[in-house]
Length: 458
Ligand SMILES: [Zn+2]
Image (cartoon, rainbow, N blue to C red; front, top):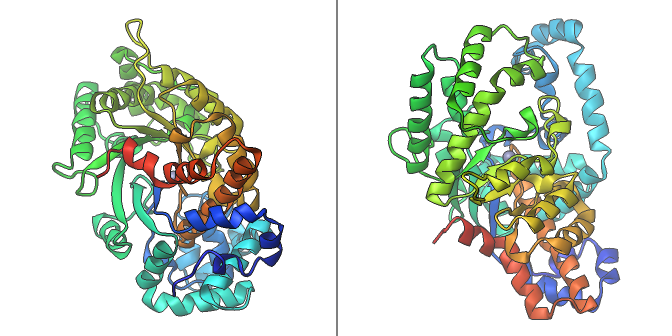
């Protein structure tokens, strides 16, 4: 079904009536624009049929790491187990009660309540969670068709896929997803941690490690050999910040070599949940790898996305994710020169949005990306977009969702991104800081043009 701008707001009559008359003009001009999602993840068919509780668990940042609250493998055994297994594991770990408690609270968030109303409009059902899941399960019979309709509804034309979080999927599942969302094109990003994961367990010398690290990195970028699940990559991604905090580039290989030796000596000896000890052992080695990767980005003139702000507790160390900890990386100075690699701090630095915005304001080579904040901040995206546009040049702001597991995250981010961006731009036109045409140009830059020029997509 073809929806127009007014249809998309018909279930929100109060919101619509409260907007300045200019809003509908601006919204109309941008709701159908193409969208490029500059940071996001694979969707599998594992959530084609679901329950309200499982849906809530899989979509939320507090819910999806539930397995990590238990010893490794326990939650998976519980999930897949028969009644007797479940009974035993519940007795030992109190799993069902914990899941009930966690998902009960998540379902009480304004985000979930708003999501239900939005999805009910798309699925043409009653705005209740049970009704939405029932209608969704009906669509699950042709799940890839449903996923495709979500992508089409917000007009996604390109996604930059971080293959470093893929729920254990291989090339076949990634390809299925890529084919399902066509004509939206997928462009892959190579995550440094994927290479480390392959090489850290190997009993090899540091010289060999170093050589293999660089070779594998180039292979992922060029798409030769194993490539990035068989294809080339358009940029790189690092998850180092939440592990170590302040990232100081490291060029001295002898320091990295000592760290490699320490890793060999301590491998599998640090308890799974002692995250700080684990990260400390490899800190220098990871700084060294990061530096090699950033040199490669500089050489190829491709961007490095860096996880910044955001959640993913209980594994990450929240206090490490301050956007200002990326300053040394933005400088990347050597031989008395600032070398200005293209840095994209991810997740709007959320909740430190102001700091991430200010870093982008000050460093010409630092960009700004809107994911996680979009869509999880929902209605207040209006104020957040205003805050970002206060200081970040419009040519450096890039739309993204960080969608994972649940395809509706792609859709919701696109829908809310366009709506609340229109609201923020309207405010600028009313205030006289932007003309109407400039406001529409701003939306084009943020929604797709900046991504295309930064990654040189054709
Ligand atoms: Zn991500």
